[in-house]
Image 1 (tube, one colour):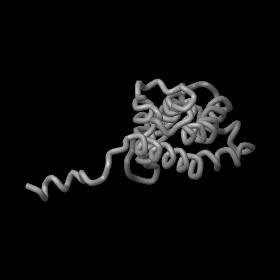
Image 2 (cartoon, helix red, strand yellow):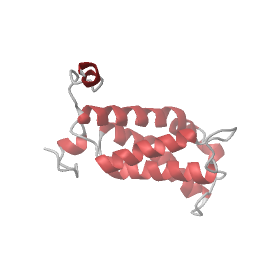
Image 3 (cartoon, helix red, strand yellow):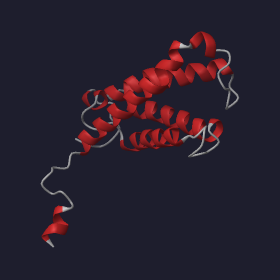
Image 4 (cartoon, one colour):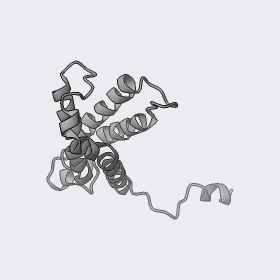
Length: 146
């Protein structure tokens, strides 16, 4: 029975705020490095040809995606306006998964990373940024944690 209890790792303190900080940092950084930066650096080529998946124009789609994948991700890492940026990133990823990757998890145009990113951002939308954030420091945090 003691072995079963040890599987719960009771000797490691639970810190959900640290977990939220790590989630924000990891998924925000990965978004910038592997998605946002490349789109921002190829603006000349992509601005007028970016996929208009939801019917708002290629240019507006490009601006919104680049905004959320770079500046929204930076704000997410800092924990500033976390919930709105997480919602924007989740929406972006679910549009990419469903309309660009056609909900395929495997194959040449697979969208499993967009799916995983989308749920990470959705998690941050529902949980908020945690105590280790600028939202919490400045009283923007909409969770009731003290």
